[in-house]
Image (cartoon, rainbow, N blue to C red):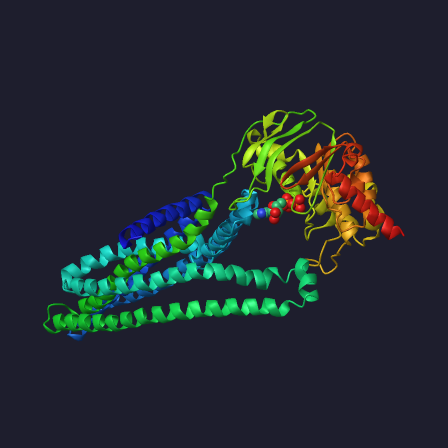
Length: 609
Ligand code: ADP
């Protein structure tokens, strides 16, 4: 992009982010503006104290030195000294109080933004959670609102700096125009150079930020996510700590090099700025000293000019560098807005789900995963009647789980339609639609919360009901043996007395969670794969009874678990190849199901023998 349009985009981003921050502050913490008001008063009082008061003091002293009677000046002299001290104390007290209170607000805002970010990340379309671009943007957003931008308070601070410096500039310009006007071109010309070099420095910083985003994500994954309990076994048993360590080391070298390079480039600009600043001071003093020697200004005015010259420069600098700074900070923080604006691509319907037994229909459904070319499901036609128990079987990778993900609307179909009660599922309101399903996936997740929370997944829970459900899933006895009962924390992430459930207990907890949800459609996607066939058969048979008249879909490798289902759909080559009851399917000569069943039956015979 050409430099000019790049700058225009930056300006637009800055304005948008700045207004967003101002609006958020006004809505969430209007008190902040009162605090900035106090700071404003303190800053103006300080300028009066350091620029104007010394002039009056010096002029009084010089008059006395020149031989005028002390008693004519003493009251004013004492008055100025008291005023000087009073202003100094008042400024520092007001500034301390305002800054202290602002720090607390800053903390509050940090949490506010982090919560917003987490909320968006937890609710965005599921497919975004697999998109590396979105994940990288999430990382940039996190960093963009952290110390890089200084958060909302950092941005408001910089904006305030611009405003206060405009007011100060107006004041000192008036003084300088009257007493030493040549100072203006001197300061302005130096400022041009400084602005140019400062812009170069800021550019280096922003480039650095963007370069670091990716390596930071890998670095944090290795350092913070992998030491998590859930990865612990694989890492130890496969002795992969060294590999992980190497990965982290590589990333930290990469980061170090990025930092080194950016510091080197920034240092060059800083040196140039230091040198030209010294020139500016020298020439300004020379000019003001010349005016004093020529008696064009008094000694008091000399002091006022010196202070004004420095204030003129620093306020101009404050405005320009403040704008550069606010641009830089807003560009970091804009990553946060960019993430919040990630639009969910799945259409959101608003139709209510009718309270009636539900019929599910897949009509010519085809699907390929986002960002891939290959269709993993093609021309799926399937009807599941209310209360029907359907078993889905097929080899690994046949598309069974994908079908469930489509039904639950984790993804939308690429072709065809899925209907519930004759209505395309895209037309239903998402919240209501999701309540139709209780799903236990093969890779179900338990959280590092209490056992109760893991089942209820909500703030409110009915302990009696959870216990009843555990009786049904066969986890009651075991759960009673846990020292803290339903309060037992899973994993040791947050509680040293936390427990790790056995594979079977975890599955029973996950199945309990599904039953607790009271959803009309229950889906088990091989959560029992880790169990032996007999245990799995028991769970499925028991579950079959538990589910009763509700619609149920079971995915299993073990065909013995399908026998009691009303229908069986056999998935192969990305589509449904066979469909019928167990008896019908075993009767198909050279049928896929019949073949699989015979092989598995053989396995049990061999193992029994
Ligand atoms: P099954 O449940 O029958 O074992 P899946 O539905 O999990 O099969 O997978 C079907 C195909 O889709 C496989 O080839 C798998 O590699 C691919 N697949 C699964 N999940 C994803 C994903 N998130 N992104 C891309 N491809 C995927």
